[in-house]
Length: 579
Image (cartoon, rainbow, N blue to C red; front, side):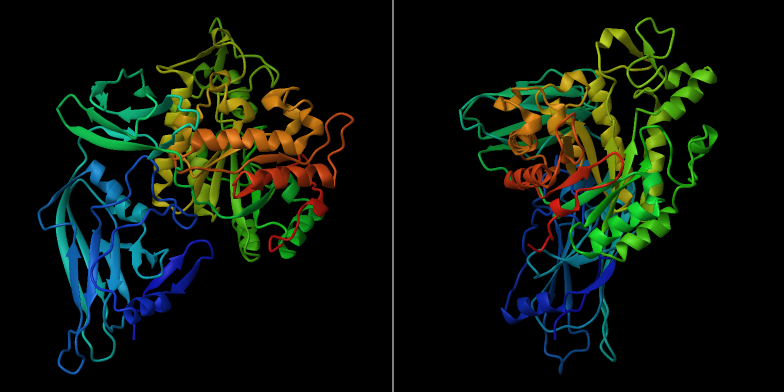
């Protein structure tokens, strides 16, 4: 017999029997404890790419004994944390529980921290059970903590339990940087952007690093550097150490194969459109649907419980979120909830009418709402805590309804000269404020298994300052970046492509490859938005849509999101995923 663990496989919301994997371990005569493996796949977005993921694991080895001579025939050995040990914030990045078997056993493995059940799942190598890091870290509290690991026995066999008490002290800085960065083939210096919390000073390989307002920093690393050793220190002398490896082959991000369609909230209520989407799912041509939570008009697609949405009249009744999610999950389709963040005419209009200028982006004089192509009062203030909380409240509520992912859109400032606009309360550069909002959103979702993505302009990889979307600052906080690389949005000659709208495959390939270069080593995947709508006299038919899909996949992207503003798609361009 082998240990039978029960685990919740998040993608299918089903229990998984890991007996087979652990049986292989027993049959092979495996003994001892193994090191942690980096894993940041769809079923667990718990790891943050700025943290080291190897070492300091809590390892439980289950030793076999002769059943005829013992009742308590297993031994639990908890390694990595000792009674009375003090754990710091940096240690949370490495904390995990790994359960391995080296002998015959039977029962259910249970892990509890401070009374909270911590899920366990089969490891990627099939030879162990591991805990989800997010629930584990979420259950840790400042001060004393109690960890219990239990292997239940069967029938007359007894169970076994180990308990450890440790303390947690969160003092000290927090570094938010990629684990790896790409070493350019041309031998040029490496540029790194990052964030740090609560630091009064920082060094990189022993050299001082200037810190910008908001804790942002930029490193220019000389060619030939193999590793960047960062040390951040706070005013009390607490330190945080983090290393970034410089490599020609960063570890690829993990994200599920994805063929997704955008569906507006109102369109989901349209029986014809909804049926087309369901038929595509049944035919195996798509495996994800991006369903709007809050759209470009500021409308929330369902009757939300978020108070600000109801206060400003944003809540609509286009669909029931739990029913929609259940219907799509029944077809094994992931549901991606799109939240349009700072472009919000509904909230902006309400703010203008109610003299809440603090919620608005103002013009250069600071006397009136900013007027641009989106309207007189359309963009809300990205520096406002109330505006930021609104987006996060909608996101966490949607996850409670069963949405698998949250995809932020318009997570940026308005286009235009910064001198022509004002943001009340903004104390950092706009791109730093945007990145910190995304980081805070990621922290909010840490109590869930939902993934987080950001939709960004196609130009953001080369010209981030134009819309405050610094990809290097954003990528470490998300599971994927979705650049809007629509061929019709590029100017002639961009990336050396003479006529992008008529060369959709060429421009998608070049632009997506550039995003891969920028996010390499951050832990974020690149899942581009592709075009399924006509542009002027250029019809986007099967050939042009297919060319984009093929080009995106050729770059190593795990999939794509297809955009049509009316939620109507070129069906024949969507090939069965098994092909």
